[in-house]
Structure formats: structure tokens, C-alpha cells
Image 1: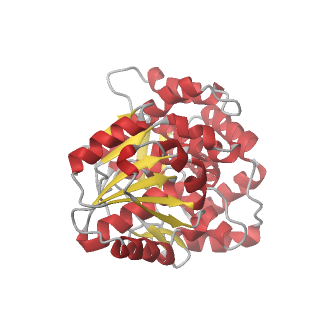
Image 2: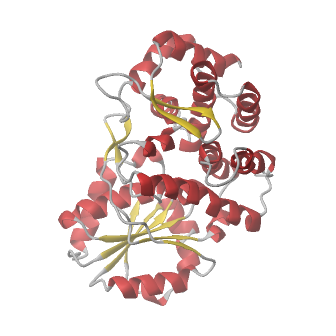
Length: 358
């Protein structure tokens, strides 16, 4: 997989016009959900290049990230006369970029698509890295393909449309990147600088100029890992830190009251940092600092010990698993990544106990 074209800008209309010209599509489509159609599409309303575009709208929310919605997108492309030379612009959060990327990758065996993420989560995670997909059978991202967008245009002006919960949801993935921040030529101490800034930044009343820089740094962590392992055969599994438990929390929540992806990841980080301490010697003080930040900002999903068997069963479906063994990404320290780690049922239950009571 080639290096993905990332454009950080405050001039989305101009950059989009250049990219559309480069792609030379015969027909142009824009995918939005009900929320981004109302709040984000008007921001691009003056873009002359979109005047002849066909807008396809799907319901908002991760519970709609499934076959029915992707079928609706395929039908919209088909009715609009899309060919292999057409272009789909995905304007929205991670649900839209994931589902839209999958729809584009499979329609007529693949048409071009551009991602314009409008949420913090999509900017730092979902729209970057070439993963596309939908939920299926009650499981997160069960169906999908690896395929890069023609480009990803990241403009933090869209963050003005977000509520506090959605900002926090994306920030959880930035915390994950801060924990993964790999040493380059710098010292071990330097790798914790990013996490330290994340812990002290006022995400409740964010300075968007500062946040723009932090987003770029966060994306760089993910990009570096993806370039080394595009299809998740090895080190890219590092990006699943917090996600084995997190996806289980998220899938359980889908059966009750859906939660934002980043909240589930934040809760997953609590459990997996606990396992990192127990199994890999991760420093207790750094674990405690991160856990306190998470619990202060994200609270807890209410679970009891009666939910443990369901959560563990959901973990057995994680895509990192091999031969039925649950695999975790853990840490020996910040940037000291340990992929393909396992844990006993008792250790998993201890991590859930810590999550509930720690």
C-alpha cells in the first residue's frame, strides 16, 4: 500500500477542487449522514466543483453502519449512473468514511474516493490508514477491505460543529497514539512528551490552533506504523491498543445503549494498561495517571461481573485473534509495544474488576 496523501488545510474548498481535477471523474457523488448534511455540507456549500454532485444521505450513528446503509449507497451510485471512473467524497465522521470507503471499494470492483473527516475521531483514526468496513452480525467492522482514499483532507474548522462528547471520543484515539509514540532518534523521555501534553491540554475548552498541531502529530504516529505494516500482519496491531476490550464494550453497548467508539476505546485502555502492568511491567505511575484521566473525562460503562462471560465471548471474535486465542496489544512502557500478548480468563476478569473499581 502506497503512502496515503494527507492534506492539512484551512482551505478545504480549494484543496478539494485540485483533487477533483486530478481524479478527473465522469460523475461526482458526496456521501453524508443526516448530521453532516445539516452541519458540514453547508461549509462546502460554496464549492463550485460540487454544484453538479449527487448527494447520498444515510442515517447518522454507528448502529447504521451496516448492510442496509451500504446497500443504500450502492443504490445511490447506481441510480446516479456511477461508472468505474466516478468519484465518491465521504464527508463525515468515522462511520461515514469507513462505510463510504467500503462502498466505493466494492462498487464496480472499486471507484475512487476522497475522505473529508469532520470529527476528531475520524481525523486522527478512522479516515487515515486504508481500513474500510461495516458492522455485521453484532460485531464491529466485521466486513471490510484495505484500500486508501485518493487523499484525506483534514480541516479542523469542522471541529466547531462537534459537541463535547464527540470531541472526547476522538481524543481517546489521540491518547492511544500518545501511549504508542515510538522513539526515533530521541531519548526514551522524549517519547512521553506527547502523552504529557495530551494529559494537560484543556480538551473541555480546546484551543483549536493548538489542537490542529496536536492532530497532525497524532496522525503522524499512526501513519508511521501503517507505512511499516499496511495490512496488519505485525506492528500495525499496535494501533489496536485499547481495542480488544474496547470493541467488546462497544458491542455490548450496541445491545443496550450505544456508546461512542472513543469512549469504548478509553475504557479499553484502562483494562489493557492494567494488563500491561501485570504482564509487561508497564510503570504503575504512568498507568495510574492515564487511568485517572480516562475515568475523570469518560466515566465508566456500567457493568457487573455477570457481564464478564459476554464480554469475553465478544473478545473471541476480535480480528487480531489466532486459533481462538484472544490477542492483546500491551505496553512495556510508552512506545514499548508488545503485540500478540495473551491473558488467562482470570487475568481478563481481574482487568475488568480493576475497570469497575480502580
